[in-house]
Structure formats: structure tokens, C-alpha cells
Image (cartoon, rainbow, N blue to C red; front, side):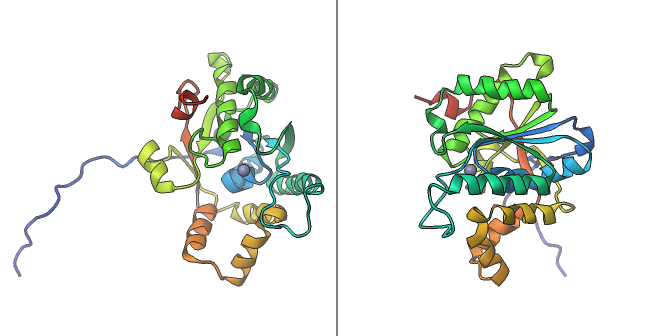
Length: 258
Ligand SMILES: [Zn+2]
């Protein structure tokens, strides 16, 4: 048998960065700052439960009541008036499952981008000063798909930036949407949280947000998802990934704000 000759593309020596594992034992406190009830579970529910299991205080500072979160008549059991109370109850239930304390910022749903980011950042900063977390989780401004997500991502970044150097928690940013596009722009995520030990609680917390997830679970439970749905489910229940965001890094989103 002839020895195969090497042809084709040259060996690519570019090192593939391996994300650092998220280690709850290294945390003093975890503060999650996202705009809607359910964002916490989707983005980092497994990590929140891991921290709670390790005795690390976990707080979810939720931007809005998500009371505009009704699409195409779903959920059928809520209307615009009742949805706020329903989502607050769902959040309380989900946070109980994840071992987190829920706090509300009380901003208007779908209007976070119209707030003065510096003003709201002062309120977020006060919570950081009070709780003194070692890590803050927020959306990556400009890579979070929804206007509220991007806006509160920037607000969280400004809050951490405004603290004196020695008092700044680590800022972990969540990028959502097109994973390939995110990778092309940001590279590989820096931190990977293995949630295999808490994925059942993540699912339970997702179920608690029934006004938002009922339709998804019908498909899961009856196993009638399309390929896209299956890929989303795999991503959701796999490891939770975060980018380390330098609080002083001026993102395109911040630079291009009107
Ligand atoms: Zn959201």
C-alpha cells in the first residue's frame, strides 16, 4: 500500500482557545442582570443553580415584568392586564427552583432602550455595592438580539465600569442569536459552565415560566420539534457559555447609540 502523500490545505496552526470552566467554589456571590423574567433561566439557570448548591448567594435583578411578552394570542390564559402578575409569579417560582433571590428594577417592558443608561446604571451599581458579587452576568451589548437585552447589557457594563478598580466584579456576557455570527465577531466564549448536574432544575425553572415556554414544551414532550428546534434545545441544555467583557471596552453598540 502506497504511503499517502499530504495534499490540500496546509495544517492550520491557529490555536483553538479552550474556554475556562466556571467554578462556583471560586465565587463569593453571583448577580444576574437581565431584562425579562425567563432570561435568567434560558441564559444561565444551570449556573445559578450550581452557585446556589455551592452556598454562593445568587440574585437575579430583573429589569422588567415582561408584561408585553404575549405573542399571537399566547399564552391563552393571560391578557395584557394579567400578564405582569403572572410573570412575576412565574419568576418567583423559577428563582425558588434555582436557589436565587429575585429583585425587580421595575422598568417598562420593551422600553429599556429609551431609558437614560447612566441613570439606570447608578441603580444597578447600588445593588452591586450592596451585594458585592464576584461575578455579574449580563447580555453582551449588540449581541443579544432584543433591544431590551442590548440596552440592559450596556447598563450593566456601565454599572461595573463606574465602580472603583478594586471593587469591580467580573463581568460575564451572554451572546444570543446566530452563534456562527457571534463566533465570527467575538471568537470562542471565554467561560464554559458545565450544567450537567443542574440541567433538571434548569428544565423545571423553564417550565415555571409557562406563559413563555408552554408551546416549546408541547413540542419537547411530544417530540415533534423541527431541526432548528432540536439544535436550540441541545444548545439550551448543553453548557452555558459566557464572554469575559472588559467593563471599559467600548462596544460598537455603545459607540453607535444615538
Ligand atoms: Zn428577554
